[in-house]
Structure formats: structure tokens, C-alpha cells
Image (tube, rainbow, N blue to C red; front, side):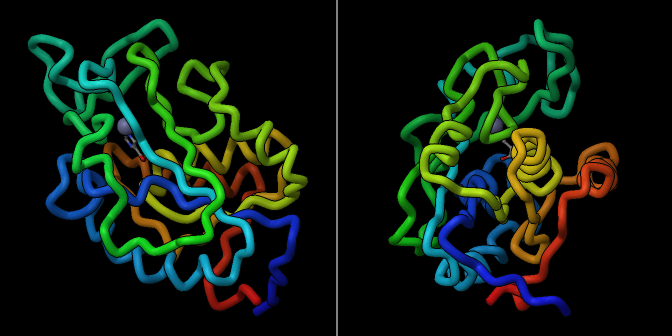
Amino acid sequence: MARIKIGDRDVLIVVDIQNDFCPGGSLSVPNGHEVVPVINRLAKQFPHVVLTQDWHPPDHLSFASAHPGKKPYDIIAVDYGQQILWPDHCVQATHGAEFHKDLHVPHAALVLRKGIHRAIDSYSTFYENDRKTPTGLVGYLRERGFARVFLAGLALDFCVRYSAEDAKREGFGVAVIEDACRGIDVDGSMGAARKSLEGLGVVRVDPEALA
Ligand code: VGL
Ligand code: ZN
């Protein structure tokens, strides 16, 4: 296996390792907690780490509870296209929005919060689902001089996928560390994610390949 040498122009983005996405949480990703020790180890190999946090106001448009008569996983039309409705999750300043208690990445330099606008969901950590509202992360990464983005976290078929796609479009080298990700898998979303990432030339790497 080819080794990838991690250096100063590489950044690890750890996506949404929050209680609500782990078993017992309101939008739990099957076996989501399993990535925590993997990410803790991985992060030690990266001098630069960013953590992201899904961070919604209580009446967020992506919540089924905000749409009378609708239930989680229904799909509705909104201004920017289709929106899957989710159980209430990652509400700002609640236990569900906190990082998993065992996540240990003390040297992470930035915590980027997304999904903060009531009327726009945000899967990607770079652009919200209207595809034009920026989170500011592109500017941060450019100003810090990073060239390659490595992604790990939850959920592979939503936030990791869309973040990888946007990073690629923005001209960064992108690798997804799949062993450090888990997916939700609604309506074939895992297959769709793998196909899309492959089509864009996003590299899949094993944690063991990093040096
Ligand atoms: C996510 C669904 C809704 C994710 C966030 O982090 O993948 N998925 N909000
Ligand atoms: Zn969300």
C-alpha cells in the first residue's frame, strides 16, 4: 500500500462526532461511536485538525417537527430544492449537540459550526444546502495555506460526502478515510455517496497508509 506522508499543508477535518449521531442519540448513525478511538489515533498524526459541529436552532427547517403532518425521512420541497426531514438533532447548546465524551483532539485549532441558519440545512462544512451560503471554512483553509483535506467522521453519506465534494470543487486535494466514517444509509444514500466521490476522483485512504 502506498504511504501518504502527512505534512504542514495537510488538514484533518473531523465531521460531527456529536452525541445525537451516536447510539442513543436522536439521529444515531449505526455504530457511529466506533469511529471515536480511530479518530483519536488518527488526529495524532495530523499537526492541523478542524472539528465540525452540526448546530441547529430549535425550529430548524430540516426538522420534521417544524412541518405539521410530516415525519422524519419524508422529503419536502424548499426554496433551494429537496430537503430530507430529520428527527430534531444537534440543537444549539444541548447535550445532543455536544461532542462525544471520548473524542480527544486537544490540538484542534478550529471548531466550525454549521446549519446555524433556520431556513437552510447544511450537510457540507463549506457551503450550506442552498449551495451558495458559505460557512467560511474555504477562506480559513486557504489563509492557513492548506492544500490537502482529509475527512473523517459522521455521516459518510451526508456531511462527509458533501464536504468532500465541495473541497474538491474548491481545488483542494481530498481524501476520505472511510474506516474513520460511518453512514446513515437512507434510500441508497451510501451507494450514491461512494459513486459520486469516485466520480469526482476523491481518494479513499486507510488509516494505516498515513505516515
Ligand atoms: C447530518 C443529517 C442531518 C450529518 C447532519 O452530519 O451527516 N446528517 N444533519
Ligand atoms: Zn443536521
